[in-house]
Image 1 (cartoon, rainbow, N blue to C red):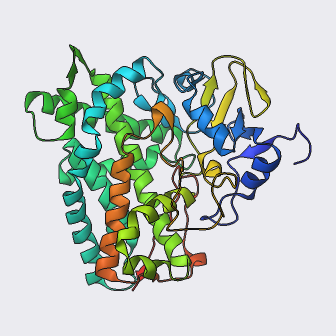
Image 2: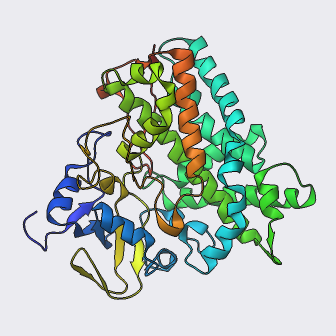
Image 3: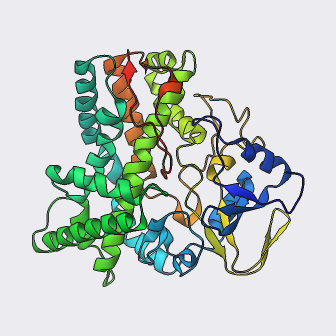
Length: 399
């Protein structure tokens, strides 16, 4: 990577699914703002240092909405759709976030903790009953977040698998054809549309009803905005959390003594969860492309108006200038300004819920299983490529 004009291909290929690609460290040191080519032929500026990534995430001159325009570079088909809070700019984003944030306060999300704990207790209990070799993905990592999100939205239990199937297709990077993605998206949207109509006619005690009836000085959410928000919740709340649970367990089990340390001191779980989030490579750096709205400079590199910029959160979270021993897992890390949930106006609304689910899942595993470990050599785990959030297909545990 000595030539400044050398165009690297992104996403990079990591040597190990729990480790960042080697290119991140090289780019942070030599070319912290580098031009890279995506598989679809688009080129973007890849930003890899923590300070620069924070700036891109917070600077309003980098637009998310612009990636929904025809021909704009994007990594996931789900990025298209200007009514999603995920790809809105102010003032539309400000208005929508104000309306939905009332149901995502720390207090409201803390109220969910007992239900999350109950679900996790039941799911881990069934793992324990099945005995060593039970699959973490099927028993806990998949069903816990999808059940929590569906219950929040008021989706009946018998329909949870439908939601899981549709979002699995929609968040495949290239494994599914565009026709399959469009078909799944259409079915999900129609289901949510029918559900919204049902909540309008018969309000219930769930998040979707609160959003349907949300009002602020006469303002309200349109059906299109409700649909897009429901889709975004399912994507972020299910897939990301499923992968983070799997990555967290794998990371803990490969560190000698880590599981035992947490089992002896479960009060240390909150700090450990934040460190697992910092350390994780589950997201792969895929997704949050921005478009520069004017000429500017990042890290000494000129960015032209219209250029696409990709802030690489997974690289920023390993920045040696910010995190002491950045490539080491430190479960007691006291200063941890990781960017796993983003930064700025698009900081994840469900960040606290994600922390609750990860903490509760690990707590119940430690309580009911004790010192768990992976039941097969990690090299034998099957990782499906082309997922926005990576994880093994099956993760058998022993204890």
